[in-house]
Image (cartoon, rainbow, N blue to C red; front, side, top):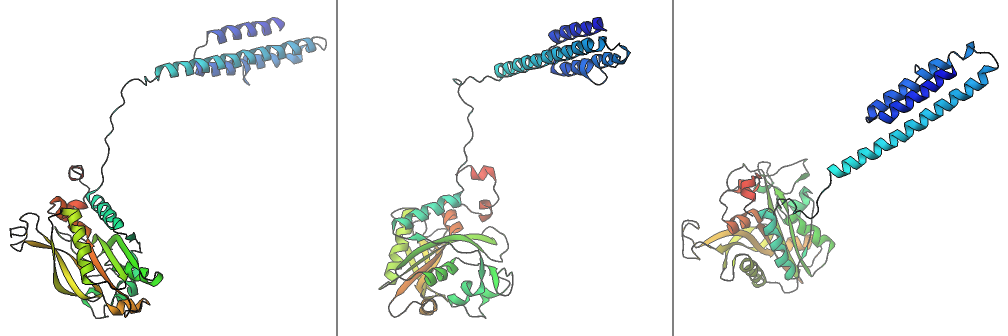
Length: 339
C-alpha cells in the first residue's frame, strides 16, 4: 500500500507539471482527490491493515494528499498568471495611435431657438419661471378672464383629464402662478409645452411650445411692450427687422394686439410667402387686463403690465425656412443633422 501511495504521488506530480489547461486541472483534482479518486480508493483498504501498520500508512496518505493539494494550488496560480499575462498582451492598446472619431450630436432647432430667446430676455433682466403642464381650469382659463362659455374651453379644443383638470393650452397660466406668489416689479418669461386638440398637419400639432412673457410694474405702457418685442425680433432676425401691432382681442389683455414681423423674404415689399402683406403674423400680446391683476392681488390702479405669447415652432420655422411643422417632431436624422 505504501508503494501504491508513492506511485499516486509521483503520477499526480507528473500529470500536474504537464497540465496547461485549467479545465484539465479540475479533472486531475477529481481523479486523484475526489470521492471516487485513486487516493480515496487506497484509503478504503485501510481496514485490511494491521493495527501496527495503520498509523504509518495513515500518516503517509495524509502527506500524499497535502502534497497533491499543494501542487494543485501552485499549478492553478501559475495557469491564472499565464492567462492574465496572455490577456494583457493580446489586449494591449497603443495609446499613441489616433482615436476613433465619434459623431457628435447637435441641438434640436427648437432648443437652439429657445436658448437664444432665453439669453435675449435674461440680458434684458428677465428671469425664467416654470409651471405645471397638468393644470387646474382656474389657472388656465378662469384666472385669465376667460368666461365659462368661451370657445377655447370647449372639449374640441382642450384635453380635459377631469372637469377641473386639463393639459394646459397656453403658458399664460404660469403668469397667474407668478403674480400670486410674487409682488411687482415682475419681469419673467415661461417657456414650456402646451397642448391643444388639433389635427396634425404642416402647421398644427396637438403638442407644441410657447414662451410666455410678463412684465408688471408702475407706469408700464404699450410702448414698453413694442420696444421689448422689437428688440427681441432684431436679435433673432437682424437689425433691419421691423414689427407692427394690429388691434385684436384676447380676454386676458386689454388693449390686445397681434404682432407681425417683417417678411424676411421680401423685407416688407410683399411676396408669395407673406401673401403680399409684407409682414407675417407671429404672436399675440397686450396690456394685462385689470381683472387678471386684481384676481392675483395686485392693485390695478397702481400697477400695469404687458404680456405676450410666442409660438416657439413658428419662430423656428421662420428662422430656418422650415415649411412643415411635422419635421420638428419626427426625429428624422437627415433633417436634424442640418442643425
